[in-house]
Image (cartoon, rainbow, N blue to C red; front, side, top):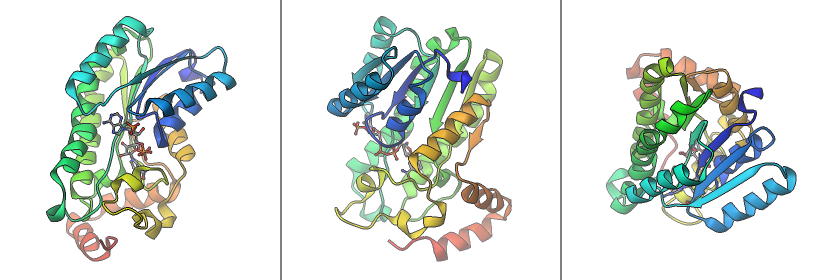
Length: 268
Ligand SMILES: NC(=O)c1ccc[n+]([C@@H]2O[C@H](COP(=O)([O-])OP(=O)(O)OC[C@H]3O[C@@H](n4cnc5c(N)ncnc54)[C@H](OP(=O)(O)O)[C@@H]3O)[C@@H](O)[C@H]2O)c1
């Protein structure tokens, strides 16, 4: 993927799952990776592994709780002082919450709104000046297929991802004349820690296991996302089965989609 040759990429949520995989797949190409998350030990361990495999790579790590506005501002100032610019911003940090909205916990809901929407939007604004200085700037927002469908049992999560996809599409149209591409990665279920964190009760079977046909690996999802960025695509749904299913579902009148979701969404 020549597009990423010698780039500096900032990846949020790099301590696990897709974020960690973005770092692994970009490492052979990039000049510098900036890895951000709360769990510093995970970031340090990943940095060690990346440097062992790619000794000429520069890996900067920054521990930050990105739900907190002041920490996002501090991250931006730290980048201005310590990083060699930013060509690619991968807005990946996020979380879910699985269960009926009525029995939800406000702290979990607020954390999800803050990280999935507030953080993603604010980081774009903070880092745009860096992207504008780059010769091949790109922004990848990790959304979800949940953003296309209002999912009972993940009502707030699917609404946050509807925001991410809509925001990315409109922003892409605004930024293209400035030479910055915007891509929304819209995966279906991927086995990561996401499902452990999204479950309210420890030990529940992750609900993605009820739809195995749509599951893709983190490697497949990240590869599809990076290829879409390199091609300047506005959005991508990884996995051929899911891509066809989503494409078909979006052609159907919404009344039918609502009926299907009401009657066939996985039980809570
Ligand atoms: N897995 C799926 O099925 C799936 C499907 C569609 C979309 N997605 C999206 O993919 C993205 C990555 O999820 P994943 O599956 O890789 O889940 P994951 O393994 O749980 O990773 C989430 C990452 O976000 C970081 N994060 C969460 N809250 C943070 C905060 N307050 N500050 C800084 N970093 C924070 C976590 O790091 P720390 O905990 O160390 O801070 C972690 O690195 C999310 O946006 C998710 O919505 C996932």
